[in-house]
Length: 402
Image (cartoon, rainbow, N blue to C red):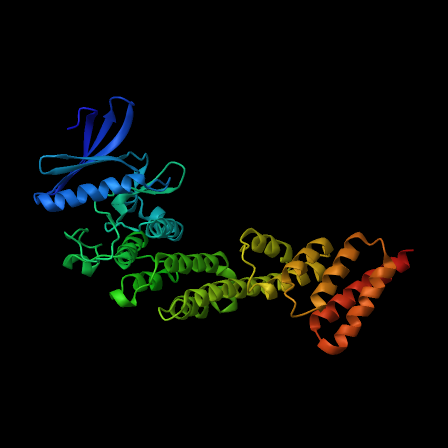
């Protein structure tokens, strides 16, 4: 062993590798050292070079590689030691906790793998499993043990087969791996976290991940989007169940919107539109139950930065703020977001809302109402009728008060 490191304890041992906790004598810092047996000199040199090239990669969500050296027929990989608990242990000891966190953890893990794939050059992890994921004290997950990882090249064939039985993709047994192999192992890992009590819709994502190679999601970004939509669905689960639309939504999301035949741009558009559709269902029922303010707060909390496809949702939010909450300043903000040029009357809604929020210029407000009435002769919009009715009620009340 390199004299710089002092072994504290053995963490794990298998036929092909040993993992130790060690202390850096110079820095007084803990490291994880993995010794991997490799009798083939050519393969050993290949792994050594690959591990050294990955030393440049750093992210707080992964255990960084500090150095790599060779001892006889063993490759020694020195990696950052991560404090926390293995997900494998949590699944074994606290299965209910794991089941309850499945969606949250699934999104985190998918984002980590997606980040590796988008690195330049791409990193294929190849050995994803609960034992290689640490839940840190801050609640964030960290991916450890890059001993099986490889740098992606034009040649999809591997010099050696890697992976863990029960998690590795079928093609890995034949010495071939790429991003889709990681998607497969992700599906197996997520299935293990969920156990038998899979939350609604997540089984479809797992099935797509672990399907035949050409039937899987094409990228981990697609997996992230699928899981985030499920997160939105579960946010409004009780409301959607009451409306009887949950099953249809989940089926459409996972089966249709994320079909492998879809282009990325179309998928992104569908993702945003579906979130808008879910939120509109929620807002509609919240209005009926007198919970408009709570609904608007929730929608704001999860607001998507890209407003494309959300115009109708923002319009309905503006109407709720205007007609139900009497919060004209908030309504103006929503109407501004809803403007896309296709319905000029929305700009009038916004101006009326701004005037009513301050209510200092009654004549200007009356002119705007008249302007909207003229526009209404063309559009016949129910929204315009509601705005006019509410604005005139406020004007009449103000006149009576005077």
